[in-house]
Image (cartoon, rainbow, N blue to C red; front, side):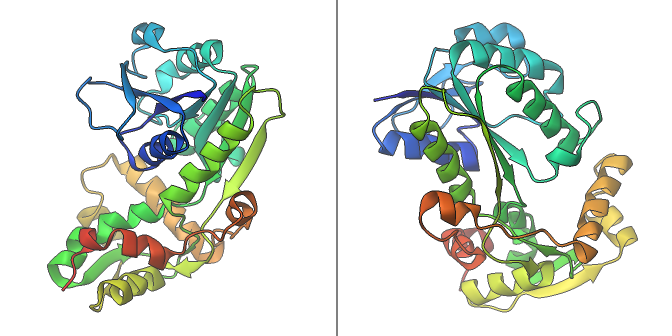
Length: 285
């Protein structure tokens, strides 16, 4: 039996990682801000805040860490967090993002935040597994209120092509790496993880309709409409950076890799399978 630390265990990827580790017979300590946080059965809560380095002394010594970091929000404490983890864990599997390799670790924004964490981890002396993920299939849950209301997705750049990945595949790869390299002696690795197919955002909406059993129409918004309707509550620069990323996938689609299948010995889960797992979120007849 091995001991692991999981951050983000109340979330989609971290929660699945914790559950998989427990199901395989290992002990899991989950970093949470509140002792009564809802966790997978069998996980032990460790009350600490990654945004407050003074709370990190309670972190236990473990055989490995699955790290989901609150990007941008907790950047000021990133060095302290990685330092604390490196003192207590011989290996860290970090949920990063495709594109982090091209970002400036000293810059600002989500990709810069991921690049900064990657740099800190790889320079810490522990074995690193960098899980550079394509877009999360779960991000389409942002469409769910519209779909439940009238079966329409109002979103920009319908022809942007992505390779969305199931959160369980991300968790499965990270868990496999942690278990297989528990002594931290193997060389660090970087995995670019994607879903098994490249579809346009308009096609993703259609797949949702097929799985839930009612049509879903994609209504393409202009940039101005998207800024007003979807991102009006965000800082303008941040909203524009999101739209710039969406626009880039029109001419430069997210690539598809076979890494998930190679590492897990089974095909990566399709978007249709992901929708079936989240059917209730979109509403069904």
